[in-house]
Length: 116
Image 1: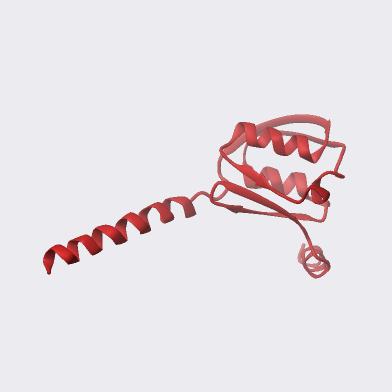
Image 2: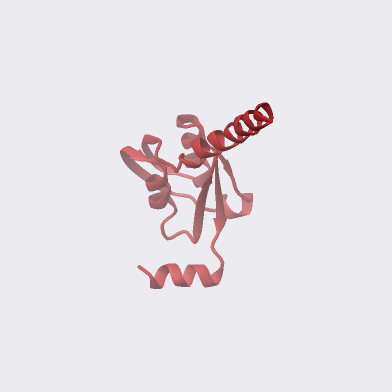
């Protein structure tokens, strides 16, 4: 009986600890970006090169965003994305090692504007 209990505790710990470590990653990897007049796709590629993150997005949501200039030094990835996506009707969510970019729907876009 004691052996079964110890195996159960060990099993629970092997599941809980990795999930807890992954959930702590919230976009606080710090990066420096100096880009002038580039597309959002190029910004995404640079961030992927500088970090362990991979991006997920619909092509039609990101491909028409051009003429982005950014000069950021040693900032967390989430703050960089907030600045890059500001005013573009796009939002992002960090999930483990992925960053999901999605188009804001009408209701969320309006509430985000009204809350600022």
